[in-house]
Length: 184
Image (tube, rainbow, N blue to C red):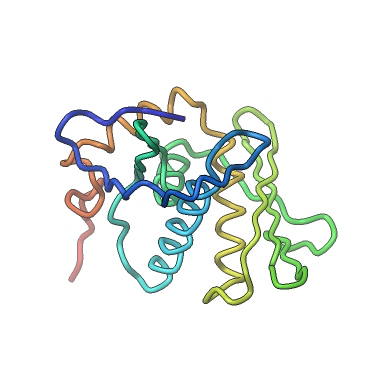
């Protein structure tokens, strides 16, 4: 999905991939761009485990003369939190929320997401190198992100990107909620 950010809006633009233009021949999408996106989401997953607050819900990369913009890992989670009515369906074979198995140097994760409102289910899958810190958690969270992302209509994603690309809507600068609980 390509959405141009508003003029003057900084949405965390990362430098364009190196000049090595190896491409995924099936889709014509530069492989480097896909890898940068995966690395960024892996870093956000690990940062969340350390208790850090997300810096942005949106990522943006330059690819030649185009700007590629989409929801980052925390953005997908926030979009689904707002939407609600979603459940994770336990795996049929192991009865766990996330099915994770080893395959050579990788961990492969599968998660089944159930949209309770529309009564549809999607699978989210991912892989993660075992050498990545917290590889099990990273693989499971990436699979969850991939499944949840399938529930979001493209039009809704475009609207959220537009909303969250505004500097005042970035999560680190303005929380979406205010704590009104009574404490002694």
